[in-house]
Image 1 (tube, rainbow, N blue to C red):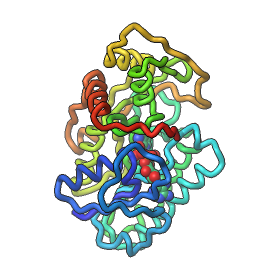
Image 2: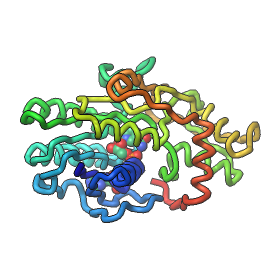
Image 3: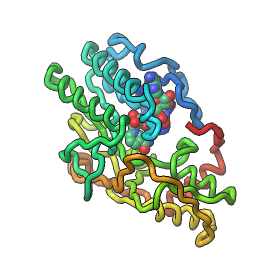
Length: 306
Ligand SMILES: NC(=O)c1ccc[n+]([C@@H]2O[C@H](COP(=O)([O-])OP(=O)(O)OC[C@H]3O[C@@H](n4cnc5c(N)ncnc54)[C@H](O)[C@@H]3O)[C@@H](O)[C@H]2O)c1
């Protein structure tokens, strides 16, 4: 299969590019390198802004996977972040519809669900609480608008990622920040009281889910990509201290909660499992030790938080 991946130097994009190439697919990798990253770039990466892609660049591609975005929720409150993500997504959806590419898979986020209780199924209403989430909602609406206009056989799907973690994640994300603090003997810093729960999905499991979505004959209009299990940030801190041999030996610092903090995200994985089959998600403790080992082997922290 011939694919084009945007955001291919990113955390998910680089792992997906590697997995698809290993599986024998041809992948054109595009990223403007606007986000400083601790990962090696995929071979042959085209360093360009998504907004410079024309329909001709997408022609003859079977599947375009659009991952490029500025993904910081707190930073999305600054002027320009919402505008960037909506402009990039609007441009790519438009270029796709004017091209001969067969399918477009767009990255969305659990953030579109906002503050709701219980496992979050795809039919739950949108309730964004940040400009980042509002931009993803806008992209999902654009997809709904364009989907019925596509010729037969062409498809436009949305995948809603929950919190993906693992080796090569950016240093300022919660798991690497905790691992870095714990392994260097510094206190772990928790925003708020730490009772907020997150559905943590290991990058290898997220890539397995994505490759199943891509290899299936048809894209679903929207599907969750999460583990279906959540842990509180306090539980994650305990697990990191255990994995680094510092169990019961904090200390932990608490800082102010984020604006509009969401208390819980847990994916309802029923639709994914029914459509693509079950996934055996890595247990957190084992995944943290694996991440530590991998980190010791390959991680070079940039020291430049974003
Ligand atoms: N990682 C997660 O836990 C998570 C959760 C929910 C949603 N998502 C979404 O999944 C997608 C991928 O996430 P990620 O973790 O790999 O993010 P990432 O920040 O690691 O990678 C995004 C990449 O997009 C590139 N980029 C940004 N703007 C661009 C532009 N205009 N043109 C070309 N490239 C551009 C950046 O340079 C970066 O390499 C994003 O859309 C993100 O919003 C991720």
